[in-house]
Length: 339
Image 1 (tube, helix red, strand yellow):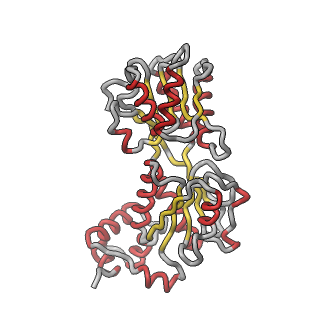
Image 2: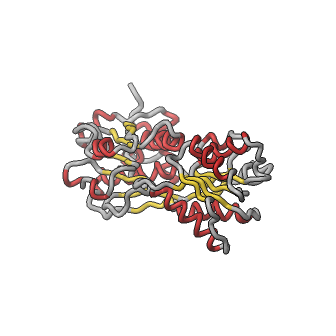
Image 3: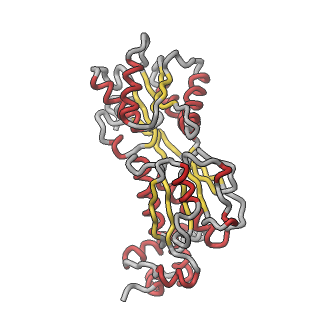
């Protein structure tokens, strides 16, 4: 027989109701109490009886997270964070890849399959506000990630991309760099993240009394390593190549580092490079990559808790806008010897 909730409550010195609240992700549990209960759960190996809970509540205990690309490290790491947070709250996670395609995102929003999931966390690329279905129309509760869609009537979790880009650009300016470039501009309808990061880059230059030099904003098809490498080659071929580059993602920055190494350009002595995301690969590149860190655990926690709040009776509450913090992480690609 498995560990019972009553035994967890006894170990943690709390009521069974408090253990239930922690397992089900209720927000109104004191942090110290939640930590004590979670420690007892982990030590005793307690696992909620999802079948019994489903019969009582009419819920499956399964939530879904639908992301554009699972072969991109940022989204893969985000999916892992959602799974970990959801598991701590007694939920199983179904992971779906949409490829950023409209029809796949529509299937996800409609519930993937009737009675399969309780709710959905979606990072949309193709859908707009008019495409999203209200929970009153029969679709499961929905929490949105990213910048593609906002002001929709759904809970939304994102970072302030303008501020994040300004922080990265200000760091390059603080190093005394004079010719700053950006890699990651995009013209696609779904490229809201790129547009916001370009806005922050340009605003930081303007505040410093600088202008964007001709050719120093390089557009890409996608945030991939190969796009970053090609864009960096184009920058190096300019009559006045940059001495610092802000890349709109770490994958673009890693591609830029590869191009710089291939062409014998020293980093950071000749060109400083900074990215955004802090994917695991950025901590093991040569040189290690300076970046703007997005707290994926915080993103996952806010998204899961917002979804559970809707499922636990908060469906009539006003939609909430959650802005996740970020921080600058200085490494060798901008400051030699930094770790």
